[in-house]
Image (cartoon, rainbow, N blue to C red):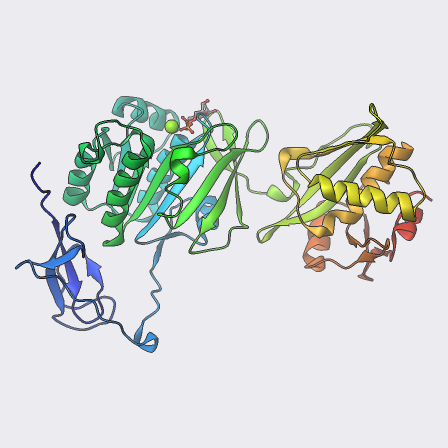
Length: 451
Ligand code: TYD
Ligand code: MG
């Protein structure tokens, strides 16, 4: 097979910055006449070579001479997407989005393509689909009222078609939907193998690494979240996101790995009949509204997901154990934590849990791992066990020690503020803040709740 001809880039001989077009002055280090024409040779061990075939030498530089780029990120035009990426998409980076089929990956990406062009009007977006035809994609975009007139669409399965399009278009945003459909005969004749995936992803990643471009690839994962093939790509990309269903319409976009930001930020969308919508006031998204009072076994607590506070509802149920050994059924809160808190209640508050099966759930499907939820979990368990509801509109905060003490939590002021804004009038926590009820141990907590 003929060797693939490399594409041309311009590299600064001073600082090594590369970009697709020639410039008199390097935008990175500000030097004049330092941009040299180079060829990105996909077959060379060192990918950058001069026109005469000699390889480009890269030199180390002292850190103090390295400039911080202000414009290192693009806004994707989608604020929740930007949030999860750590404040926009970093140029020359590769992002992998995994999710079950039908979760909304293609919808998210066609919306993002349109939003990206609106925010970065001079740039180009290439949307590569191996799953749908151009007219299907257009029909969806039209139904969602998106302006995709200037999005370049390429429906192909061949990697070489994609690389040709990249070289001719020079897009700032490249979307590959999905990486599992792309194949190259260079990586063997069977499409869909791990070596195909790795080869194709590597070629695409190498392309964006040399340009001010962002690569977003989708990957289908199975229900259990096993991404056998895509898993092998995780170390190759800069950012791994998962797109998940929280409840019927609510979708979470969360980072599992991010070289350029925290992995705590959560992006929240609602899947509606006209596409994915950003939730403008997510703090109350997980609260259940009830007409006739809150039943026993339910406690609310303000939790952090990244930098935002959400009030969530912990639900507990206890029933006499069916077997001689009691069991804990809890998916959203670690069941060892549930057992530990039940044990503290049994020892310090004198109520028996060891003959009970315990069920714990969190409304809205958020997973809770903060220790700040301990006291609320204890209150929900106690309330379920004695079958007495907690006071209406109450929030409980605190970490619970094995000795039954209730300990302070981080970022208390922000949690209280959000709780108040959502109309919670009773706030119980271990610190003396304005207008809250301070409790120091499990006994005083229960006395305050069930007086
Ligand atoms: P899609 O983006 O095709 O999912 P993926 O690419 O992850 O496989 O989303 C398909 C689902 O989303 C489909 O079941 C219908 C639903 N949907 C809506 O509810 N509203 C919409 O506006 C769109 C476009 C899709
Ligand atoms: Mg799709």
